[in-house]
Image: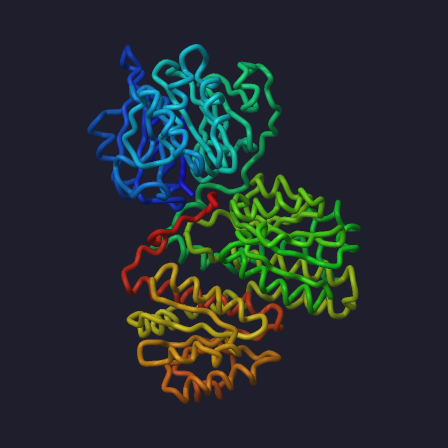
Length: 620
């Protein structure tokens, strides 16, 4: 969840570290800190500054202390162990303040390690689990190199970590290692940057290496070396691991606001282009199918599967629920979507005719990755839909499809969700044509899918109108979101967006379940949002709307253009262009995103960084 960055090179480290932290701040913003080796000091003293709150609070402290070193590490925190305080902020140090560690992850056995270290005379300052790491390194750093001491410490750790370590005694070296928390190494000209993701690196280089679990990077300003932790523990750091250098497709402009007040609004407005990018080169219009290059090596295996299990979390889980309807109706494939954090505990029944599809924007979601590894232990086919090239899920699945959505900085997912739905639509077309979908049906679906970007662009032109509606409802504290069939998961997603960024309590329900309990909540303090496009369940959703209206409830409806009758029931209506039922979530989602955004803006909420949340959930 947290963001870490380390720099070693010829430039002044503090400016690079703070700039990188700002780009990582969506991963956590409870507190921040940096530690820099003062190369101008004969003793190579490490200066450390920390603040409670956001990264911008570090800048005046850095200028006051005149930190000029060219080696340093920094951290922006999403609190797990211990409240957001200056003492609990990273980086953490050993007893003599000579070793500093920035850490993303959770040390599960920290209490036992801390107790033993305290018995040995180590003094702890914070409530965090991380602080055991510098003390463990201090314990071993007596008769070996820094990397060997780090490796020895890590062999005692249970849990997850992505770490960056510096030390006064080796002032021209940075050591980093990972196990379960992502780390990427940027390769510059006589300089290297280690970070939690590429957004912190892009301004300096597009050449990167992704570390795998159990690997350690040893960096100097002249060279780098990647070894496994076990080899480092034995002092065998000459046994280098060959790592493929990858070129990042994104550019720094994509990770900037470009005049928008928030990243979320910018990312909502990119969605027509996001869908075009996801479709580009993948629709075979004449054949009525999709070409998914990432699946070519498992095409025969996919033809033989009879069951698909989808593992995902949060918004990606809702995309999986929509895929259940898609795969079942158009590919005749029995599909079950599982909350990834619960998947392993259900003793899932997986066999050779089952495939597991993992959906994750970052490709690093801890629970989804754990589900993937459980499936791999059982030897079943594993697939991935991810947005980040080179991410762990992308590397560990047997095959998969990239979203090509570009960087998503806003904590509340918008364009990543739309891109996931686009890829799932392509996958439906691919699987359907493998099985029993006629060519005519495939062609029609491909043609309709190709029209979606322009239809999203039409919805985006209604922003002023949607803003006006959102402002009317921003004072409410409760909301129900209701939909059926393909748009039931959209109701869940719409409610999630509203509560994530506006802090309005919102619940999503299958509309048919409303009268089994939720209708008791209808009063003057609650409004209802119905997703009601023309589809096979339209008449039933209208009946549900009448039930709310009869009890005096306020109603917002998402409806198909030309439907004037719905105005007789709903208090406010937002229209979308017509589309096939299967593709309607690609359209109905967009006005719900805009409604949530403008409601949050009206309430003065920190939209890109909502309280208690972080973008990439890399801890279980």
